Length: 195
Image 1 (cartoon, rainbow, N blue to C red):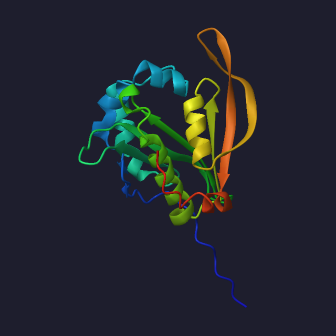
Image 2 (image 1 turned 30 degrees about the vertical axis):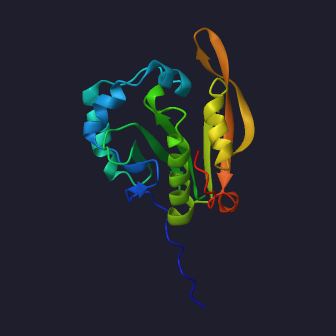
Image 3 (image 1 turned 90 degrees about the vertical axis):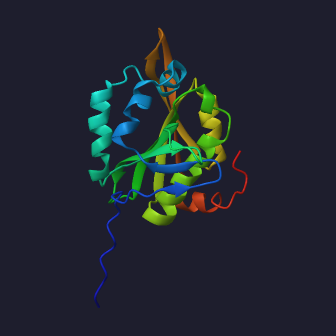
């Protein structure tokens, strides 16, 4: 009896994913100026203390197409190719079929419009239905309930708390650990509501 070797899970393919409200395309070096100008509220909600200089960002974003262990896609609105944020699958463990997930929108002009929800659903559909992942996990800070609501809406389950994970403006902030498994995604993938 000959057993077929399983296909190795990889994030080498850099697709463009299209939804009703957003298009996710591979990030590019010329997205660097928008990344460097992240709104202070986005920095706080993501716990980002320092944004690299534009040239450092250009080098990083320009080389991401070569990585097979992560997928970084820019969030853009239909009919517009300007970077509005990004959705990322990272820290791939191909043997366990798992990876991390993060998403950000560059500023309040993009908040509350369903862009993050749709971008998350597009990325999860790609992760589970195309790549074949089993688990996608993330952390969200306690002072970002809007993001936690979006993650719960698309199927992430709260698994625990990393107490005092971040020190921000003199206060300790907990990080909530959340994950979604492939069978849980199966119950969320068909949701038509993307708001």
